Image (cartoon, rainbow, N blue to C red; front, top):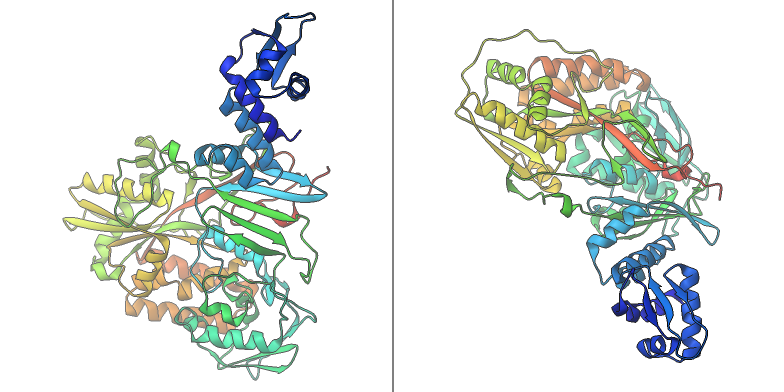
Length: 580
């Protein structure tokens, strides 16, 4: 019998009492569940085999048998729903538990991991927020950029050290005399919607990208983009750029249909996973069988939004932050300082590339000495002490430059400076940024400075920066790098709207000149060495204050053998496999 139908009979028996011996005849049970005695005997046997109850029949007319029910209604519903979730029957599970989303989220967390159904391998994960539409040309948070890499391909691929390899382009050349790059496409390339990827559509895509304000600083030196033949894309520049092929490995230059630039409802790419569905509650990815390389080992990935309201997670809303509320985030991919094994779980930990940082906004007119003094009193060590004093924790290590392996910046101490009566701090909806902001507010209040923290949703935060209307004195943000580390940090310094909005015109002109010079003379593998003194100069001039490098910890059940943690703190889901 179908378990859902069988459960309906069980729920009628619960009124007899749970976890207590009930003396009752078979006929009385049959009357209670509205069925015949013969059929009742069958369903009691099936329930007993499933472990729902114990039935000890007595022989003889009117002899009372012993019935012992093991589950309350909600307990049995939870067990059945958990089994349904494991089998991918999410809607039925939700209906069974009467659309109790808190319970549903708890069951999702308990069943997260890998399961094989009908020969196919499926991954289920949970995450504390919804995902925005996965569009390469939009400003995206760290997890969305990880997902971009699963859904899209670029012409080239760049690793952490700047070594290039092929993706959609199998070969590329650079004419140093003519400043001309050519990329040669693989044959038979397809978007997820079945349309072909041709040199013409790629050239048109880059022509459109060049017109977007967000790409103008990066592509300003590109004078012409064309498709000499069906498998070749040509870029003509007006100055040398030895690392241009690495720039095109950035997730922002993922290959997508041109029509998608004017639509925010689709995510059509060419990567090893395609977006099957995206809603407020879940994201479903499906392996793309026409992927140009090795197909993903996993058939599907489902990532559910599970908000931890019961643990005190607050909604991040625009406006001033209520710092008396606790911000808690517990989910499948979590940041945690403990790198010990917990039970049968496995743990992967790494220090992120990039950091959380504070920017001193040029519009606030803080003097150089005031910025220096603020950098001293709001140093990462003092912020960390303040956070610990408040009973909170930041799972991170202090940052003294934008990258952890770069030289530590040292500044001489300064005398106490008179500060404004009030200072404002801007943050977007990021848990650790809130903690840093509250620690800053406490330190400043001890100096008689009133501090106001303004919180913005991520999209609004970036929109205000692009419009040059992010006017707070101090801006807290994050530098999150992708797997193409050299070009990722180069591009952040060159065109990140948060950084650009905070700098004065003179500082922007200096920074752009330094970066263009690096682009003209340096190979991609030399970018990090050339960029380090640029970063150190911005810190020494008290324009940037590095705060923390996050510790990223990935916990997963031991069925995921040998899974690595990516630079975004997520598992390498493409390579997950199971022995079962």
